Length: 138
Image 1 (cartoon, helix red, strand yellow):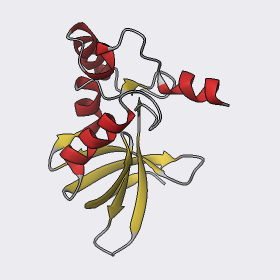
Image 2 (cartoon, one colour):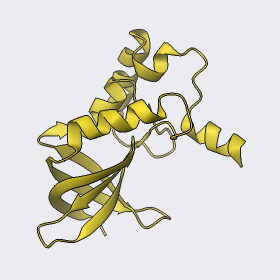
Image 3 (cartoon, one colour):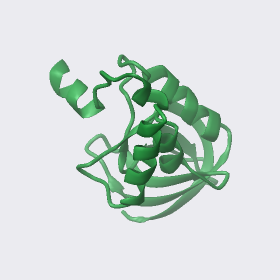
């Protein structure tokens, strides 16, 4: 299922999920790969969604599709009008590098810079990674 997809971003569900409308008028749900943004009920959940919307909503996106997740969403590296969404979200402190699935190790450097400068989630010394929040919420 790997390959490339392009289209217009027509929806933002949260800080790591968007909806793409392809030139064939097909709507595709996309999960940004390698990162994990705060859940909507978590601190920074809404800010994270707003930040992804700011850089992607209504814009042209190109995706390098890496596969599909268990919810049927395309897993992809996403660029919105040329901006690497994963790098931006991590650098802004609006998402964690998803240790379990990361392949682009340069994301760790961006995360460390965000941490050092206390951007986004890193401004809260008690911030809980989304995977731990989900586990505790079960």
